[in-house]
Image 1 (cartoon, rainbow, N blue to C red):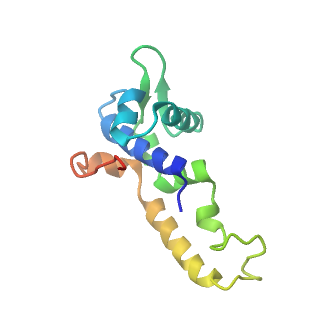
Image 2: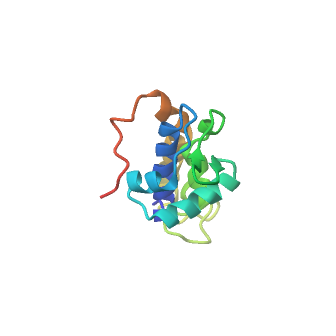
Length: 144
């Protein structure tokens, strides 16, 4: 359901939120290594999210990324929408353009319930939760 880009973005944002809780700046090499992502690919994703106000970037030899307390209030749904758009939370389960409340496809009502539940889950989960729940040891962010 999530694009590969979105999966990388979520893992990177969670890692940065955890590591920058004390104001530390996390460099791109560390981020890419910890989430098992190509460095240039994740750098491009994070620059885009930085321009949209989801995190801060710092240039230079000791540059990298960090997430402030205010930015940590963003939900995972916010990040998903920023990367993949709102299709996951509003689109047709079959990808049909004509599907709507007045002209539903065969799975419309069932899929809408699932979509709404996903939005609730991702919408209630903020980056701040990964800072306060001491999830550093519990959460493995590498995808094998």
